[in-house]
Length: 103
Image 1 (cartoon, rainbow, N blue to C red):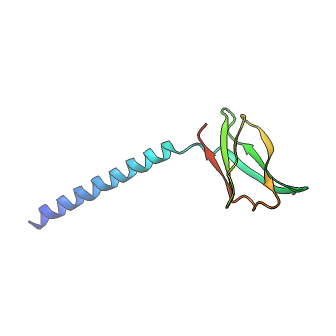
Image 2: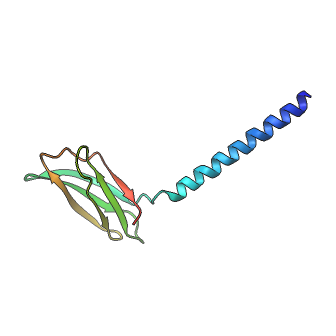
């Protein structure tokens, strides 16, 4: 009886781990590629800028700049492009991070 119970528990644990790995693979497939990288934050005059680079050399990359208590600006970069993006004035808090989005 103990042997049958042990086999049943091992089979259940094995199938559960297989299900979890399949679910994590599916979640990774839905996530957009991590192409946009923040190079620098800066303030020039009364405006805040962030220098962004598209690390994907074969595709366009879309992004959203996440700012607390403000509208999150979004945009896109062409393949291999680096540019400064103005996202607010000095009265707006500094950007928390840049989120990669699907185009």
